[in-house]
Length: 225
Image 1 (cartoon, one colour):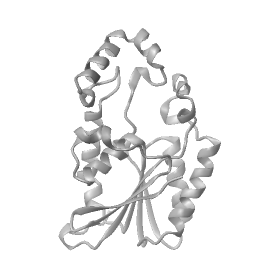
Image 2 (tube, one colour):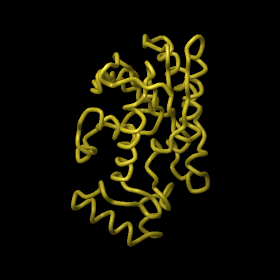
Image 3 (tube, one colour):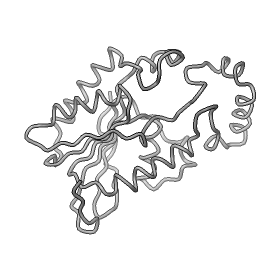
């Protein structure tokens, strides 16, 4: 990949896009018997994808060189592929998969209700209630899963190791609510402790940043349904 000096770079566009609605957004229990990676997109999600792709296609961005990053989930890969197909000719487009921008891993409780969680993993559920009462939810780890601090660490690595070095004119990151909120906070120089005050990003919601001389500037939530 070609890199340029951050000190000499021109302005670049960075788009943070949440995946379209999935079947698990409608019914969380699906994840009891389907891997999160494999959860399909809903009918509404396909319509959302078309609207989002049309918006990006008809917006002005410097797309001579475009790089799309997505997590390894069906719902993110589908949107990334549709964007690449729509924006390809005559532009040069790269598309990359990154596990650093995966959704938070809820581990063994994925798809369980609160009651089922409390029954199946009583000690972990009790620890969760204690963490919640003590305002320590950021470091709370789900059974066989991870914590928000864990997600923060890998998103920070994505920012330093990949995003800061990316030389494409437009960078599109297709991911999930939690990692995108954390990346949004990092780019806005917000502390992780502010996480619970950040609004949820809607399905196919698009946050626009520009980067110039190593500094990121938030241009707003420019698309939502």
